[in-house]
Image 1 (cartoon, rainbow, N blue to C red):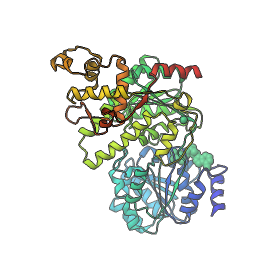
Image 2: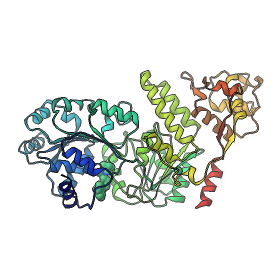
Image 3: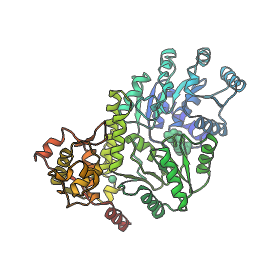
Image 4: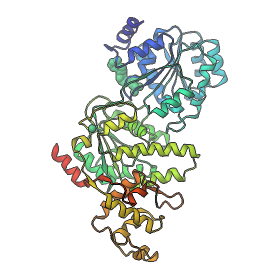
Length: 518
Ligand code: ADP
Ligand code: ZN
């Protein structure tokens, strides 16, 4: 089997040798076993089911959530002379019937189907009549209800195991935190599958997370300074931000195109095609953009809003530098991001259990954003890998300074307390700085004991303190007004029972030192 697999790799696909754990995975699935494959984007997941499909008698059924991806893969296989087809909503009834018939006549080696199609009585009957040689479940994290790519139809795929227990299954994903992994295993009944976890490290990507003051300007400066004429992706949280940012970059001489779910399908497709075919296009997008996009020379991925989870962030940044050349992952984030995302979770309609999952995911992302340790170490640690400091992230290149913020934190926390725990950061800072604004007067906050006790720090300094207190869980946003509140964790700090160190160096200095180092 091993030599046969290698022969197929070389003769059919034209590659010299297997990469990473591909050979083991191919052997497992070709031999009839189940497998769960966790490999980063660009790691070479497709061959893990394509080669077993060629080695086993019959036709493999590949479940894929993305029509565009299916078509690309089938086209690629045709070019290699492999009999492959897809069944999805783009085919009319006649064309679909022809595909079904060639499947039954045994003329195909790979058949790609959308999950909703697979679960129809018609398709299941087809599978009863002509069993598949294997099932490949691509983008298996779509089964995770807590993930941002959740597809309800994926839940139904557990039926494959019940109806066709003797057909081997291989599930593949590039999203692999422990919780998602467990969910894939239980929902797809893969308890007995061999797990193949590749390293998720992308050593050519340099991670950098900066403090936001004016995200768009900072982004423009970053692109102009480091990525003149390069292809890149800029992720934003909302459609409005996408439109505004694309317009802003365009007005500043950068070829930037918007992409989000609210844009008409033809325009979206047109923008995507330009991004793939032309050089140096910057795609400004929501997370709706990217899954299945295989463009090797994306030189940077920028986030101007904080992602909701570390796995989302990692998957998005993973679209940079698939060709292995140096690339940047750049994120600007600030106090408002933390406030906004926390509030979105608390005021969202999710059941409590899901809210807790959302909080945990956001906290992991915040932990990455606030860490003074190597970013890569934190990321890989989240995926269960041990790593040494990488030397290729901002924190490794310019170790952040920290300062004893015990006193400042106590001032900030008591000011939140004295003003009644229902005001946003701006107001709390005004009180700390002793500003007699209308709002301050209206609430008699010029008379509280914390009025004007924080003049030693500028406004930006207090924003940074509040952000870090919020990120570290000493503060929370209240569900009703979105104001800042103390958490139980704040007590020991307020009572002088603990010390606190926070990240210091203001961003401007940091950017400068970074540049000096180049
Ligand atoms: P993924 O689905 O994991 O994102 P792909 O299957 O699309 O990755 O593979 C990424 C790229 O790597 C493709 O261009 C593929 O042809 C190439 N590739 C995969 N395996 C090998 C290999 N063993 N040798 C050389 N190139 C490979
Ligand atoms: Zn590092």
